[in-house]
Length: 610
Image (cartoon, rainbow, N blue to C red; front, side):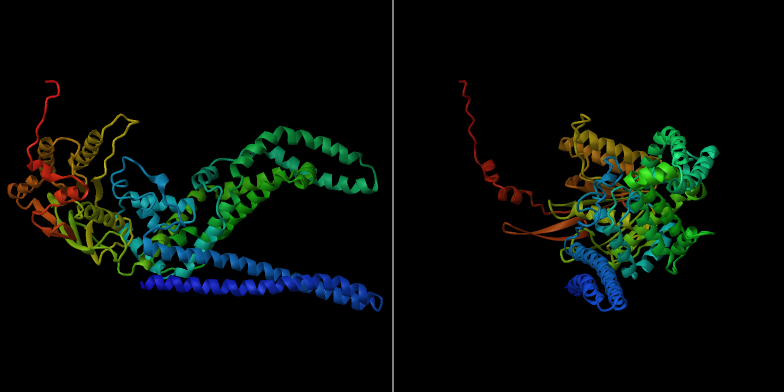
């Protein structure tokens, strides 16, 4: 069994064992609670006739025991929920290691962009995607950050910092899972960090209204005095104060509603964000990036986690404004809503401009933790070396990360440029497209700061550009051929602008006839070489292989071979130098019921009109 699968399986068993023990304890506590409650009243009644002191003492003792049992039961119940969530987390890791598919975390489908340079072809987002394999974020900002890192290469300096942080976090499995379990337990109905960050920069509706602030400060004091006086004297002062308060409520009602709508139901989001930061603040970090993030969170007066928790508490208090008791007692006489809103405004003026920075740090913490989880799960993966030259790509035992380890075939590969194009030939299903995606996905991982599915990797900092999976669009009245031409146009624009790109092209110009396809493909490859582009071109067009002779040192041939034994096909999925000589299309067509022998027969065509 896989070492990590065994590790997570043991964790699941340990957590389940603890849950069973706590459930057993809580069943006993339930009985003890019942007997304590009944015993307190029964014994008090029985003993009361003998001694009120003893009866009261027994009653107090049993009520105290009841409160203790209730407290212990609730504490255990909280731990049971925490442990059950940890069970789900570890079971998910087992499933992910076995199937490369994680159902517990967001798959990033909202980040899909049809015109992105590589996201669609390399399955970066959506079900069974690279994003879903990696993602262990419990917040929207964590998802956003991970998406941003996977969507474009970072600088070599930043990548190296991330690598060091990921290595440090990989060993902090309990710390990482603690954050995840808290986030999963407190599923967020409203998680919109961008809105809250913008809200923090905007002055409050009630900011600077000194007259209103003075009124809601003085009137509640008078109302309290009038309320006390109403019990021992006249109620007239209280009535007068209520009549004075009503216009204030009336003229501010809409503004209060608008202000509340801006913060409604966001307290749980902030509570989760505060928890993540608190856990991060409490650790001593060694890597440069983690230390920098912790320094950025440090506050002169309060830790950032407490600042966010305070805002969460204020928003939670404001959410209570529709409670009848709050509305008709505290609000009518003491301006509960306005007091909370002025306190929120005070908080916003003091810390509001920092919200975006704090949230970005949370996003980086979660994205780094996601990479760390990937690194922990795959100890045989490596952190790539980043070359300052353009272009270098060297990979040893590189495989596709979305293929299970037991089924994955790895390859050694080297591509040194610029101005180098590898033409890859091979039969159907021999592995050309998967190999291109293997290169692309691992380069994307490398340039985001994550470990790569390879024993060793050296790569230059480039943007991956692909043309592999082209679809037509009925909505845009666009054929797949025209869509591919537009994609190639985007590629050429970057090549012509001398941008550092790695091109991965699969069966280009497939939407036209074979003659035009050959002419266009040949011209495109020559154009790419002319502009010092770097790339791999997978094709069935063997005639393109002669470009190796026409452009020696700039165009090289690679191929995937196949072994045919009767009607059986055997693939080794190993890339080799040279041109493919064996193809399997005829065998596959015959297996699907196409009788190729009919071509050898004379077919008589009758003119039915004669």
